[in-house]
Length: 193
Image 1 (spheres, rainbow, N blue to C red):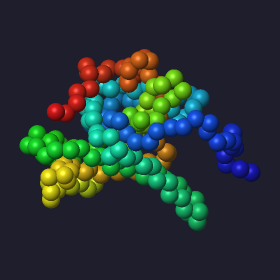
Image 2 (image 1 turned 30 degrees about the vertical axis):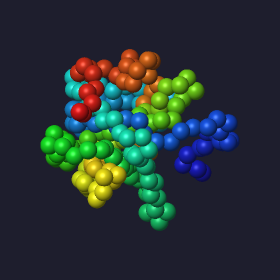
Image 3 (image 1 turned 45 degrees about the vertical axis):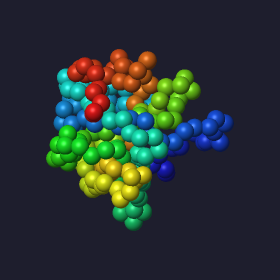
Image 4 (image 1 turned 90 degrees about the horizontal axis):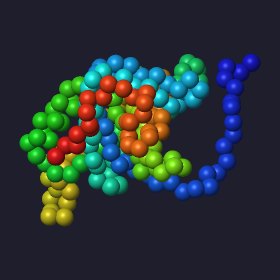
C-alpha cells in the first residue's frame, strides 16, 4: 500500500515565466508569533502573525540573487529533507552595510523572496524560506573588485534545513503582505539605503 496518493499530473506550461528575484525580505526568526498553511493546499501559507515586528526589504540588482531548495532523499534510511538556500548580492560597500551584515550573521532569520515570476493576475510570487527551522548566514564576501568596471559589494549565502519544501505565500490583494491573514505588522517594510 502506498504511503501517499498522487493527486494530479502535469503538462507543459503554455505561458512563459521570468526567473530571478526582485526583493528579499528578512524577519528575525523568533519574532514571528505564528504562521499556518492553507487547510486545502499545504504548499501555501495563508496566515502569519508578525507579532508586532517589522520585516526588512532588500532591493537586489537585477539578475544577481537566487533562491534554491535542494531535496535530499535516502532510500535506505527512508528519509527526505530540504535545504533552502539564498545567494544574495548587493552592490556598494559602506559602514552601515557592514553593521547590518554583522547583525544578519548573529541571528537566525526567516526569508521571503519576491520573485520576478508572476501569477496569472500579474502579482509577483512570494516564497517563504526557513519558516520552521530558520535560516542562517553561512558564508559571504565583501569585495572591492580590481578595475573601475568591476562590481564592489557583498555576496551573502544563507541556508536552512527543513522537513518540507519551501512554501509560497497566499496571493496578496494589491501589495505584498497585505493579506487579511497576515496580521500585527509593524508599519511598512523599510529598504536599506
